[in-house]
Image (cartoon, rainbow, N blue to C red; front, side, top):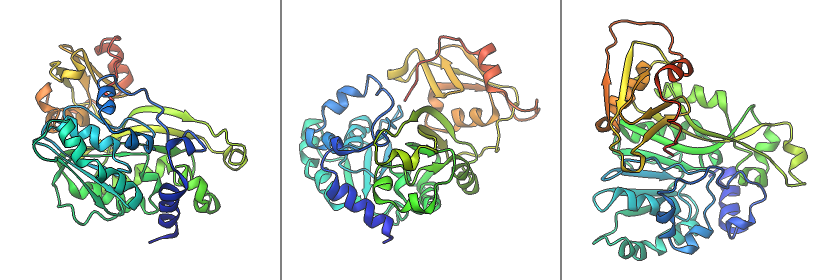
Length: 345
């Protein structure tokens, strides 16, 4: 175990008692939770909610019957929300390295199984470093989520490699985390409070892009992006030269080019995802009003035709003729209705 692992375990197992003890907003939600998820959080035991330290709402739709893995599941709030979404035929696996957090999560398995009306649990919690998911089989998971945890891992390349290994073809990685506009100094990376507050291990945007591309995740899509500020008087002087953001991003285990190219594809959303009957938003550049044809890049065409979203989309076009680079902003302005701004996440 590295010193960073030790420091993180102590911070989340001993130092923090509830989310009220956090010194910055980095590990607190910055996105408004979608309305359809709020009642599901209301079904989760209050002790679990009080020990939730996430920075976003990384729970995409269309999960019935899916196998979902939550990296750094902590007290289990997101897992118990996901448990309701995947249903009794689905499976949720929470992975964490902190015994105190796992104890809280496991304590309420039977409580939630009964509350959700299931005949048997559809959820389990496993003790692992997120850099090593050796108990999870190759290509066995439909969706990997993580809520402000990957920044805490000292070897992020191993984390992303494990995610790629366990995802099924067409599977999705969907996570919220803290990003920085530069690499942090060794001193900041070693500060246990700054690390514990989810800032010391913030992902430098370009390093993240390179690591993902090296594995085969050639494209990553930004769903939301919010600026983080550090107001704590002790931490502010150390960090004020760095620009931090809380981002929710998604990537798919699908063949893709390393930039968006135009092959003349178009896609139409049928409105069949119950929570998003009017519009579905893939990311900040790709929104789909139900029933309207929208021009899309070749990469997005593959996502919409090969991922679990394929039943909700009609995709037309081929890769026979290349029309140059795809300008998503220009395509959106001329092809997608301006009203299609409702986010899906």
